Figure (cartoon, rainbow, N blue to C red):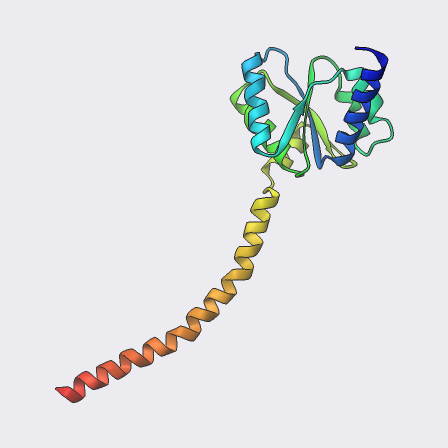
Length: 171
């Protein structure tokens, strides 16, 4: 890798660190190519990405970035998992590390907030952006359906009372 390629990689990593909602650093020693591809596939499905980069170049890219605290985790065979959604990458990595013990979570960052292993697991336990939106929409929609049900209920009660009165009058 020549100097121009390294500079380009540092720039790409810098953009990743700037734009990601969460960055998780993991040790992947012992993962096969197929297992790493499976991790990439799962991360892609969650709209996240996985990036293996030289630690030295990643540390250079971290200088002056909000998530610079993760530089301490960049030792040995590390992989960066990241996503714009502040929860997605943490969820995928947490789930995958439970299924495959070769992937070890070291820590991460959520903006300027440094995360240790427990922090990454806590973020993974949070609902995703889509889940939060769905619950908010559900809360907003519930009163409307209750009101519609309440408005419609008296009419059906009146109809059943009239039907009962009519049956008694006919008898």
